[in-house]
Structure formats: C-alpha cells, structure tokens
Length: 110
Image (cartoon, rainbow, N blue to C red; front, side, top):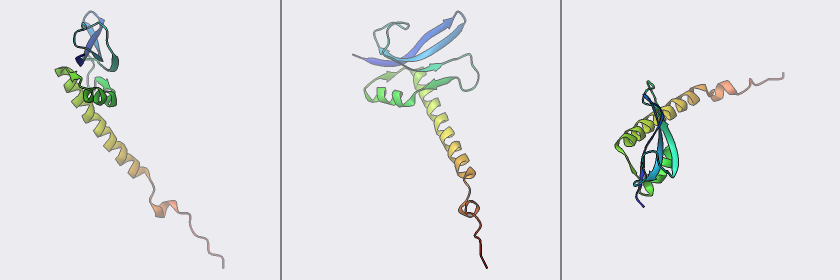
C-alpha cells in the first residue's frame, strides 16, 4: 500500500481549511485516511499550521511520501519548533538564579 501525507480540504466555500492527513494514495482527497497529523489554514496570517512532527517523522520512516505543500509545511514547522526550543532554553537559563544568589546568608554566632 502506497501511503502519502497530504492535505484534506475542509471548510466552507471560499474559506478553505486543511487537515494534514496520512492516507492511501488511491483514496480521494476527502476520502478515507489513516491518521490526522496536523492542520493548515491558508487564510490566517503568520504561523498558520500545526503539525505533530513526531508522527510525521514516524510515517516518513515507514515510507510515506509527503506532498510538495506538506513538505514545505514540515520544513516551516521544524524551523519554528527549533526556534521556540532555543528561546525557551535561553529564558530558562536567564531565569535560574546563580549559586551565590540562591544560597542563604551564613549566620555567625559570636
């Protein structure tokens, strides 16, 4: 069975909204699918897609072929996740107090 990762159109007329699905290549665009792994809203400005990168990598390792649009969405989401991870690491490092600040002052009895 040839499996592809592609977009499934949903939404009203002139208001397209897509789900990123894993499906058999032979099934129609809005037909049966194996798993939903993300969403894409082309009308939304800025970051307009969400993907479960772990599931994408799993399906690609099993031989699934992403469509051209999905391939660009994967690349875009991987870039934003690595950027978000880097910024969260920087915030975590800057918010942690140093050893000198976190140790209580020593009391001298005399």
